[in-house]
Length: 514
Image 1 (cartoon, helix red, strand yellow):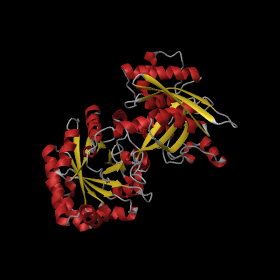
Image 2 (cartoon, helix red, strand yellow):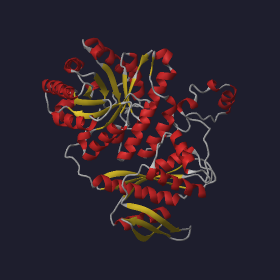
Image 3 (cartoon, one colour):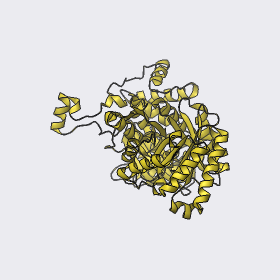
Image 4 (cartoon, one colour):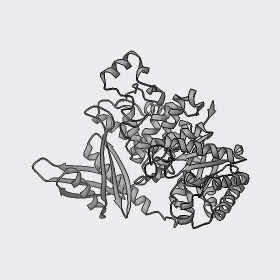
């Protein structure tokens, strides 16, 4: 049984999804969960992109043990040196350098000849190898490259010291039959290919990223580059949970599997969805809420008699269970802390106190508090970045025949600021009042409401996308009061916007990604 390495790029390619902007705490939380999940490598970011990205990669490198921690770098000494500075504190650091090899990219983007690209690739790998033994090289837009030239590049970078060569379908153009043959041909034509791990990074523009990755595995690839929930540029990447469970479920046919701790899949999916604000579609394979539901009477009858009649996977295997422990207002701080550890959170001091206070407040408004409620609280409260604007209170007057009036109280630097606004609806009035406090124009682009759990007293989760200075920022808020959730989400987005735009940005452009 061939072991397939799982290279997770949720924190790099996944964060390039429009509207996604994670703070350092959130990136560390996701990275630690990925470590619990058992991924082989975490690509923590692209350090040259900005000071914030550099700091996040360095923080992940210093905080997370187990997986390899990789940093992305273009094929140039400045990028590579910056990447190394960010990951050198990791238990197992990797530099991941890349350059485009397709005619269209070389001509229009790089404005370099094939000879110049080959030289740049080799020099980049040699320099990276002088800093660390673990170097990965990616040929951006590999599938649309001339295969003879591509093989020449791979042979040269392996000779220069690359331990992994990555073959991306950057624009999601391939079909499984073509891509499998493509990988097979590269393995046959690169004489030193057995000295490196063969990796693939497939995009999902035609909905074929996982299928292409499986075709690559059948033809000798031993590393899959994926993101949780398949997030990423445009239509996203190969989905971690889909690739992992496809390999496991069909392992007897594919003769391959992974070392992933499958019981952590669902928790990881929910965490990434929560922190990125990217809601999982109900019919999403493996982790969608409908993935293991049966409405048809024939299906229900079959499952009741024998689960495997209509389920090829056991939902408990990926961490979906009906055995949540319910805590209440009489639960103590120590019991609460121990329960959090069982959920994968190790909170101490001020962070624990903050979440425990929120938990007690929730208990006053909700009869039973489940694990889902607690996770929502932690993901919202404990992982916040710096907050210039802090929610204090909200009063709303509304009805079917009156204009809505909202009064918001926001604490800024210890001082309470109060503003009121009127609008046709209570949400609109609330957001207008917040804009008045901020004295800046933030524009609402998207608004979503979701119930964290079932029941009339369920926590209401609101996810908003707000535009500011040409960029979009995601905010999230939870409360049993949906108007309060909305206000908290809007303030969260504003705080994120200010935290990002107030940082000194590097003049380097963010790479398009593999």
